[in-house]
Image (cartoon, rainbow, N blue to C red; front, side, top):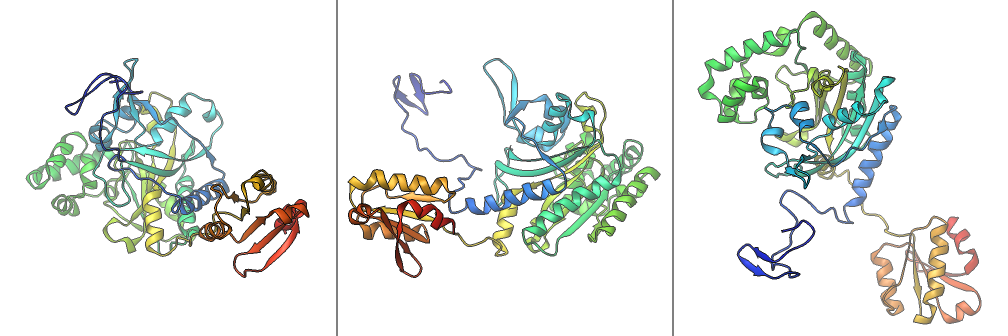
Length: 439
């Protein structure tokens, strides 16, 4: 079967000839959603806020391909992570290349930076709003295709950069109306001090191996820090008494963490240390953080990130310090809706053009184009309905005004403008309509 259409053969046991389409139900794939016109305004609002806040911090937008070579994520994210082991949409193209739909963006951005000269003059501050694809059990706010807003500061090793990205995330969430946010902060150490912590953690977990789930028993051998992030209750009970990274930090990592905390305090951002906090990807080092909205209950995290100084080197490039975060827009929008922070649906258009009789259609179209050129959102009658039906359509669109073009008005070069709220009407010369609406 070709990718561009059906060829002769069978599908699900049904025979069909060349050019015939199999009689199957066409529904959207599980774990995806249709974002319908009634919902897109809140998406526009959130995306506009993300663009505005990121740019106010000096970040510039980057967009990476929807698919990448699989090694970008095997080497960048890590073979022992859930993303690589279980969740990637991996496929082979017609040239025999192993590709994958983008499961996350940080490794993709690192790959892009390797192929450009952007990092020749650090720092480089980037942000993105793009889709990710992961095969996992769909749940509220967590889909197999989801949209993420993320920021990344490359080439900045100091703690001020960590505090800056946390402040950016908090600024966006506050700007959208969320109050009472909780910043949870931890350090998982660096390549110098983490081996001591890893050894202590493995020793502890090995003594309670039988209490761990099957996945965590495997993680204990491959990537023991991932056990700390497991959501299985029995594993969480084991982790509660485990050694904490904070107790094994080297002096440099302690100083870095103190610098982050000092900068957050200077910004007036309240934070709590969470010694059990880790991130689920291999490339993180030192600072890790989450921002939670506790009114959500168990699924309170709306944003997470940290420092990943070793990522570029893992992809075969020159080592570069970096820090950033990711924020899922689906979960954020659900949170805003639950808190009553979604604005009511507004008017779809500024004016509706109604006309009486098909012979007036071309003039109605000319008037519509004239108003659009002046910056107005305009819909015109398309079905040749009665004036009463046209006014109902305008009301459904919540159009504040209807421009009515009739044969008698057209002879005098005027149109009737109706205020849909007050029902007041006034004649306006057609050539002055644009100026009238501008006022």
